[in-house]
Image (cartoon, rainbow, N blue to C red; front, side):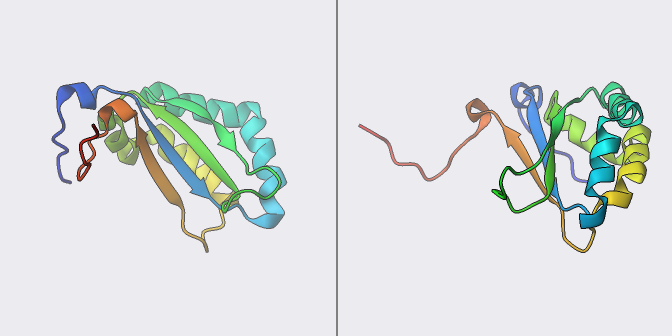
Length: 128
């Protein structure tokens, strides 16, 4: 895996990892029940504890405004945390539990969002 070479001040800035996905239509109610249950909360808390990440919630589009069924928001302490997901036992255990509800016929979409203070834009013209 390629090493990310970013300045230390950027590497230590919180980022948001957002994953959009579709759920199986006939299993959405079960998914919601699991996420809200003690078991679902424990799975998420285990990921938070192991990764140092903070789960900010699962969100659904309101009144059909949105392409995907749901999205999860995770706040990561830094960019380096993203690489920990692959080897995380807690993350893999949670995925095994939640995977039964995902509609894998449609691709997931993930975004990694950083603070505007960390964004370096190119091609901008100077303003007077």
